[in-house]
Length: 127
Image 1 (cartoon, rainbow, N blue to C red):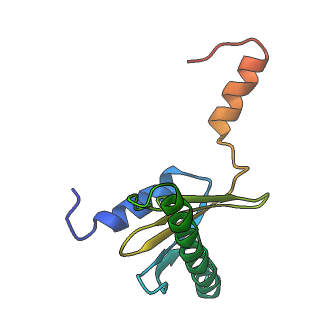
Image 2 (spheres, one colour):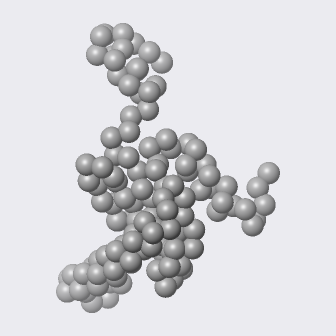
């Protein structure tokens, strides 16, 4: 049974456990300082923090400028940034109080899905 205090920790452990393609995560506070990280070392977490904080700030400025040109009454909100390279997929969810960064392997394919696709390719059906 979850308690109120361990909710985020339980969620993060499930994220790593249930999604085998997840390599790690970093949580940044309002100031862009890594307060928690998993799957990467402190130096890499600090590097992600500096680069992603700047990118989030620039993206917010960009959205603010573009959206206000269309409709001055709109207040744009950045919800998710998703970057994909050959080696990693980085999902960034900025919030008012923190920034959550998830690093994934974009080429990860679960074994079960691979087995099902092979059966379908051969004309076999599986539930």
